[in-house]
Length: 73
Image (cartoon, rainbow, N blue to C red):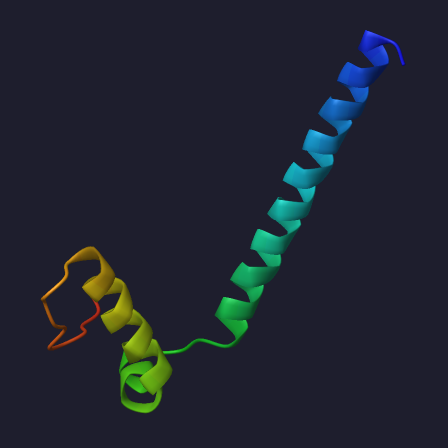
């Protein structure tokens, strides 16, 4: 394989990944717009979300505990 062909294959793969990620981001934005979810509803009903936040905070700051989760505006 010629070095110019290899460069072309690498650039086309990079472009394909960029296009794929862009399309997935657009799909995510559409899904978020169609199915909005409020933080209060998540905080009241989703214990797994609160456990994930608590675990992540405890791994960064050992010995600390999460007492309240609020949305910043």
